[in-house]
Length: 437
Image (cartoon, rainbow, N blue to C red):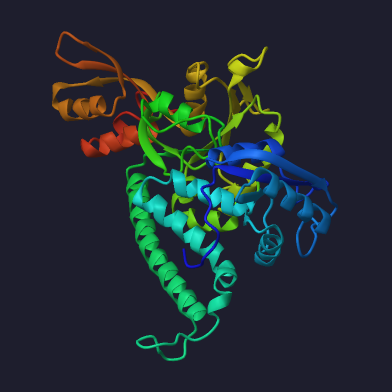
């Protein structure tokens, strides 16, 4: 963008994976392959090695750099992808030795995000993350321009080409921040409106490719893009969904998480991840058939902690039970009988009734159940109760009174009484008692 590098179509690439001991640097090699394929590259060779700590200058050591260079010449590729985050100097040193473009794990994920972004907001967030990532790498491509501009019409105030590009980059980052702040204020306004109307939000979170969008589509009849690939969904989608004993809720589909999700991406996507941070309930979707299940859960919890969403109520949804031999749809409960997990298959639409039941129990804290006798003068209250969806059945007496069987949220019932100018004491004390689940 702001610097010159060897062109690369990205079709064929040599992959490099270092097997570190368990710890912060450890990455999953199978997930690495999926990331590369999701980016549109064709892996032609995998170079692996074991190290206790990264080499300071080249990350993999001189011998491995020579082996990578040999593979580049052998397969005539123009791209080498590392399954690890490299420092700008490490990238520069490796590129100098192998005469080929080097892309680290962060750059790879950023490239996938750039391909997947569909909305204006999503594109802005990806560009911001890319600019922040590239800002530390500008010096690499512009070393031949570390002099002041010269020539007729090019003489300026003494600013070098590199300084000019750094200034342009800073100005662009500042501009994107201003536009994203506007988006954030619009989202905040929408969330406040939902809170004022007491419509609870349930945010779907989880590791990438866990089946979040498939579940979202099946529950809401939406048409969010869903595919068996990493980061199929970037842009958040909101849909309304009716839940028994709760009423209308807002279901939010969010971007998937991944191991060592670049911090720049978490920052850039904070406006959309805020949907999860301010939800009343998190629905953590988990691929129960994945061999890395426990590690994936841990990574999601780490990102939730970064966005201050780790204290929110959470319902785990173990998806893809159709890939297990013995699993059947069920609800797991804690010692208090509260739902903590639901096992289902979004693809086969198994266990949806159990999921709705669990959401209802977690969000529907207080219910009003009872039979109301309404004279004709209370026609306005009757209409409001019907509009709220709280009337289960209705009969009529010989003198024209309505006998209504009511089951709805206590708060909604009180709101209906207030709208109809009916005192709460007429019903909440004498005819029916609310009960807690």
